[in-house]
Length: 223
Image 1 (cartoon, rainbow, N blue to C red):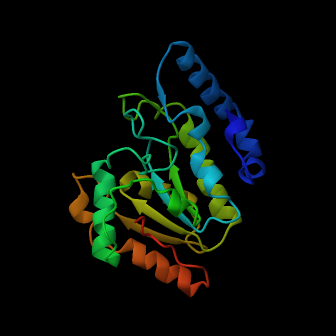
Image 2 (spheres, rainbow, N blue to C red):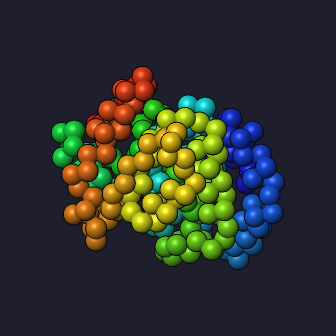
Image 3 (tube, rainbow, N blue to C red):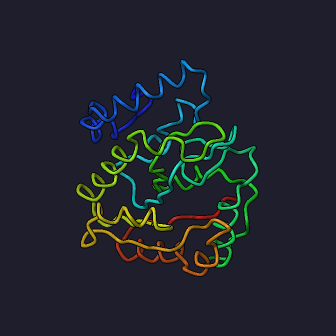
């Protein structure tokens, strides 16, 4: 599985890849495969967020919980779906907030690779899920791995903008050095909490921060 992790993340996460926790994850997924369980995303896309956004370049982090659990949706980027897939409710609400904030037209295409290519790291705290069973891999040590990822970013980089949308994401603040980085918080964009997600203007605020620290703004449009 680790062979699918590319670029400078291989060196940054070398100790995590060879840790006992990671070996447990690997064995669990291998055993599930032998039981004919369907796991999302496919193996080659588990580390897609890492492979599309190098550690050396990343400047924004958006944190999700776990992948979509329906066939064809998940491709290793939080909140993102593949080109031919209908946008899920949370992603639709993200696009509505984009329109509220920056007057960007709502996209029918929910593939967020364009954001990743501009060094927005779209990280799920849990990197795999069993088909039709949300949060089914929440207890298989993925969080140990991704907590280390967040801490690495905090320790070894400066002036990263972290977008933490809901309490689960906010719980990761303990791994982020607030003296070195920027944290923007809100509710989750799901239909259950979206009223408290709207109007925080995180997209424009992120660009304002990036401008102030002499970094290129994100083009959030997908059309």
